[in-house]
Every structure is written in C-alpha cells, then in structure tokens.
Length: 350
Ligand code: F0G
Image (cartoon, rainbow, N blue to C red; front, side, top):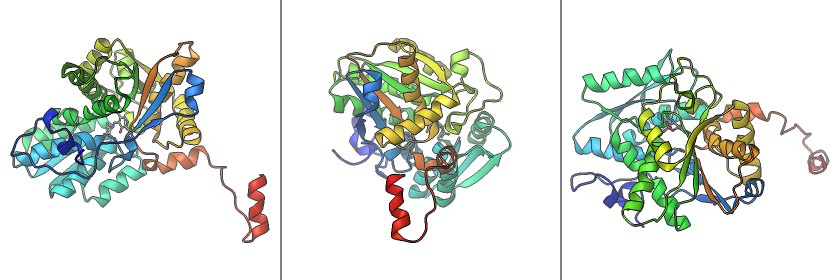
C-alpha cells in the first residue's frame, strides 16, 4: 500500500488531479491486541487502535493532511485553528511542510507541555487566550470568516474525511467491523468520522456489519451526556476539556444510528485506566485517550457481559504529549542510588 492517507485512500477522499499528494507518514497505525486487560473484560478479542503512532502523536494528522491539501489546492496560504493542543500541533506540522502561515488559538494553562513544544518547534503563530477551547473556537471561526484563512478544525469537512480512514484500517485488519468500538469524545469530530467511515465501507461492500459506538466524555466536560452546554468544563484530560462540541448533532446521529451510547467517566477512572494501559499492555497514551478503555471497564463493572465480542478501543494520542501528568501521578516509581554496583543491585530485590 502507498504511504500516507492521501495516496492510500485516494478513491475514498475528495481528491482530484489538482490536489497535491504528500505525507508526513500519517495513518496505518497499529491495532494492538490486548494480552492482559482482555481477561478482565472477558471478551473474545480486545484491540487498541493506537493513534499515538501518527507523526505528530495523535489521530489529528489523518484529517489534517486532507484539510491542508485541499487548502493548498485552492491557493490558500494561511491556516488557523482553535485547539486543546493536538489539532494545533498537527496543523503546525503540516503547515510547516507546505510552507503555510499557521495560527493557533489555545486556552492558556490548559495545553499539555508536549503539545505546546510541538507548536513552538514547528514555528506556528501562537495566541494563548484567557479562556477555554469553546471561546478559542469562536475566535478562530471569526478569523476564518474575515480573512483568506482556512479553518482546519474538525468543522472543516475535509478533516472528517481524513479521519474516517481509521475505521477502514480496523475493518481491513480484523476482516470485519468489531461489535463494539469505544472512543473518547471532546469536540465530537472523531466519533462522527468513525461512523462515516464504517458506513461508507459497508455501503461499498468492504464490510458486512457495523459496530455499536460507545463514546466517552470526561464527567466534568460531558455536555453530550447531560444535554447541556458546560460553561466551565474541567477535567485532568485537557484534550477533551470542551463544553460545547461543534459536532454535537453528528455525534448524536452516530450514537443513535449505531445503537450505541455516549456516557462519561470520572477523572479518577481516566487516570487509573491511563496507568493500567501503560503498565499492563505497554501502551502509553495521554489521559484523554484512556477514556475509551475507562468506559469499557466501567460497563464491565456495571455487569455487562462481553462474551464472544470483538472490541476496539481507540487510543487517540501519545503519552509523551503530557509528561507532567505521567510524573505527577506516579512520583515514587524511581529512587536515587549510590554510584556503585552493590547499591544499584538492590533495585532488583526492592
Ligand atoms: N483525544 C485526544 C487526544 C484529543 O486531542 C481529542 C481532541 C479527542 C480525543 C477528542 O476528539 O474532539 O474529535 O471528539 N482534541 C482537539 C484538539 C479538540 O484541539 O486537539 P474530538
């Protein structure tokens, strides 16, 4: 298969002969088979679709490559987005590769360090606002309305087009759609994109079934669960700290058409799952990404029987994005030792 989302999935994307084809290596991420957590869940097979392996460390790259290609095709020289961190890192990377001016608007104090480091390194113009993601998105939309700038948030349909390819990869690898797919939900673009992907693959005859989609928000930022906008969303999972998702209606459609649900998990559940996933499966993700598996574990605790089910949890972003949380949560897992063999050997028996 050719490399990258544009070349690999040309026939499924809004691409014509004027669309530039390029890649930073996005897509074809691993579908990791669970060895340990699968036993607790009691299902037939459990997989983690590890989107942290994309070039900027999150699923955003799949959609960004399409959004940026379409902007360049139109002759646009500047892109902008609001972000909790990952969209901005991705926009900045593809903007740099294509020589575009990239402006990002992010909530001050609520973007994980690694994501900010990426935006700085890629040379984006960074506006930190004293407000949350929802305000940043309003500003970004106005900027794009008033200037010749392409908005590359997931409101841009080309983002959704690119992100749907993850659903194709899952079906191709398993040989069918899983029975259940768990996914973190923030601005709600990704759950909408997966549903579009599963539906298209079915309609084109590449699969014969659909998964139920189970979307999980953080309790302190769960408007799709309560049905009400959160004016002051709050969660340790800063990537999904969003009170008024832009793709609200599409997420509800994905939930209802798939026969699934959108529920929430607490910060405690997110953090304990985040640790479990790294320590028992070798998959180090950022906190928001653990909400999918946290949701599955919650359902298991509530008594759901998963026998004979094939389940996929989407793990959206890399743990290296948020080193502060990793260290803050397990501060005692390393010690200091004298500079000699005997004292270090004691590590083995501690
Ligand atoms: N997981 C991670 C790691 C994210 O960065 C995001 C969204 C989500 C899940 C939720 O996806 O918004 O499509 O429902 N991050 C956006 C950003 C908001 O700005 O990087 P969604």
